[in-house]
Structure formats: C-alpha cells, structure tokens
Figure 1 (tube, rainbow, N blue to C red):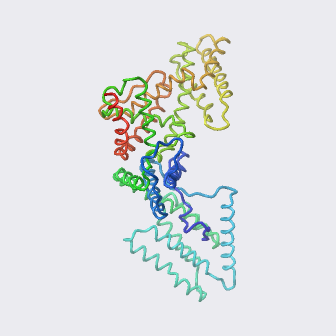
Figure 2: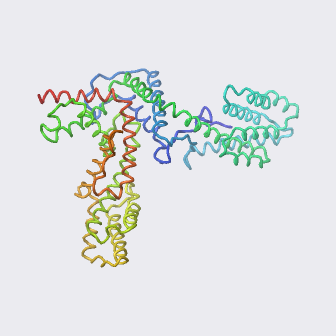
Figure 3: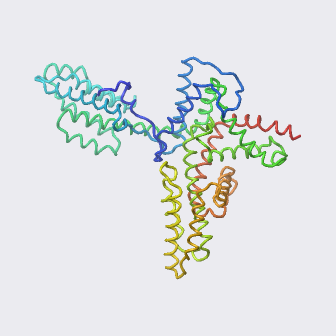
Length: 504
C-alpha cells in the first residue's frame, strides 16, 4: 500500500478515541497538547502566581523525552478513567488537501498495480510487495509462542519463493490471495466474519487486494482494542504510582508546572475562609478537616470554571474535557429544575401528583434546551417557546382532569417567570444552583461508612441525572486525589499554615 509522506506506517493513521461521548475524540490529544505547552513555555501569564523558581532551560532531547512521558501518561490515564475508551481509525476531513493527496496517491498506486498485472507477461513487483506487507500484518496478530502458525505463514508467503515463481511464470496470485483470506478468517474477531466472507466473492485481483487491506485495517483496530481491554485491569493496579511518577519527572524538568494548581487552591481557600472573619479559619487552619473541605470545594469550582479566562489546573488537565462535559450538563439540569419548580409552584395542587405530567414537561424543556451551548442558541426565543409550550400542555392536562384552565393573566405571569430564568442572577436559578452544589459536595464527602447525601428540595425531577453526575464526579476526584495527594497536601499546608499563624 502507498504511504502518505507524513506517515511511517499504516498505524500512523490511527488515533485514540473514547466513549460514545463524542467529546472523548480529542480528550487525550487535547490534554496532551496543553501539557506540552507547559513544557515549551515559562512565560508568566496574567493568571499565574509569581514563580517560586527561575525559568529552567532544557535541551531538545529533554523536551522530546518529557513530551513522550506526557503522551504515555495521558494515554494510560484515559484508558483507566474512561471505561469506554477505544481505538478508532480516522480519515482526513472531507475535501481537505490531505484527503485529496491520499486519494491521488492511492489511485496512482492501484492503477500501476493493475497495469503491471495486465502486462503480457504479467509483472508482479507491486503485488509481491503487497503480499509482504500483508504477511507482516498477519504475523503481528500472533504471539511469539505460536510457532506452528508462524511457520505456516512463513512457508505459504515465502517472498523469495513467490518471486521465483513470478520470474518463471508459475505464480498463481489467486491461490496466494485465498491463503491470505483463509488466514484472516481464522484470526479475525467474530464481528469481522461477514467482511472476510465478502472477500471470497471478489474475483479481480486489484479490488481484492484493496478490500484485503481494508479488512486488515479493521482487524488491527480490533486487536488494539482487545489489548486495551486486557491491559486495563493491570493499569488500574499500577496507574496511581505510574501517573505520580511521570508527573514528578515532568515537575523535575518544569519546576513551575504547579503554578495554576496552586492558584486554583489559593483562590478556593481565599473564597472559603474570607467569607466571614474568624469563621472556618478561626479553629485550626491546618486541620485535616479544613484541608479536606478546601480541597473538595476546589473540585466543585471546576464545575463552574471560566474556560475562556482561567487556565485549568495542571493536575486535573487530563480530565478537563470530562469536567467541562459535567459542567454543561449541570447548567442544563439547573434550568430544567428551575422551570419545573416555577411551573409547579404556579399551578399548585391542581397538577401535583398527576401521573406522567412531570416527565412530559421535563422532556419538553430538555428538547428545547438541547442547543443551549451552541452559538446559534437564542435564549429569548427559546425561553419564550418553553413558556408557550408548557402553558399549552398545562391547559390540556388541567382540562383532561376536570380543572379550570389557566386564565390569561396567570399564563402571562408564568411565561414571564420562565423567561426570567435565563438570567444567571435569577433568584430561583441561584437557589437551584446552590442546592445542586450542596448535593454534589455531599458525594465528595461520602464514604462507605456514610449514607449517600440527601436530595435537596426542588431537585426531584433531575434526581437520576444528578446522581449519575455525582457518581462520575466522585470517581474522578477520588482517583485524582490518589495520584496527586502528595502535591496537594504540601500546597494546601503552605496556603493554610500562614493563616493559622496570623489568627493566633
């Protein structure tokens, strides 16, 4: 197969992807790239605290070595944290220069192969090279101890013998292709059986070789994903120590690699302890309970992060996409709960307990808010539509159950209250936000010896989604604490101990 100029092997066209959450496609690459930026620069930013040590200049070899360590750390972290992590093939964007170049090169290669095979007598130079590539790929699917299968492939696809047969006009390329197909059928995963079966129906050599390479690429992906699933249990056992060691190596080369983490924890402590004079700081500013409270509150701040203004802490950078995903989901859930609280308070007992109504109203709101984080979202129009739609559904429901419908003035008042929720300063929205925060902090403080946190009032309609977010958040936070606890403990001690001295 022809290779693109930027590729050294066919594997170079693969990249890592995770979860059905389409967001996971660039998760590893994004976090890896941001960490690499931390390697390349020591330039202070407006959001960075003063450096505790002068810039350290490193060689290109050290940069490359560190970048490789960051890549491996990010990949291992993604495999451990993302249970749906998978390897997937990638294709250049439609209409891109890369895709056009690739198509031109491949067409030229296959046209050349076809021309060689149509010569009289046929020329098998390209075909033999393809057989060699296929042979290498088939051998990759085997373990070193599978000597019998390795011997069969080496014997049947002996390139020197095939070359001699071609020179003497005795090569049966179709027979070679059939052996390849049979071997692929023995090696492939059950999900590829149909693809291999279709290969047997192709009679022309050039289309057959094209299809063989396509199926082999899929088999490589299957093998990689099998390796990932097999590796995950072992990584779970070693990942904490591995990530901590890799980060320490990174920190040794970049002494200021915890600047944003320190600022994140410092700002959280300032916010918590500065709310009331002599409040939480009045007891013991370095007590374990206070350290834990500040730390948990810091994680909660990541769910309200201004990604456009503030740099994400280095120690959670690899999970930035996951925190952003939860943040966007929570923003939508807060609006859903706020609107439903307004509706049920406005309609009163008339709709309380009516079967199915809550789910219908919730579904309507979520559908209309589905695009709330896109540039095309128009808040005024959408919340007006929510008010209209809910008033219509409420009117129909009240009529069906023998209640008098909403009067026009009540409908107008309800629509106005719903429209007001779009403002972040809306009292009901702020109330729901604070209750969500209180519920989630309970998950971070939860232990096997304590019962799960109680659900605050007004959150019942979104209880299932909130619990899922809480479980996801607690798992993410607990793993992060395990990895970076030595770094966090030192930073928090440095932040809180001066306060204790000042208080005394």
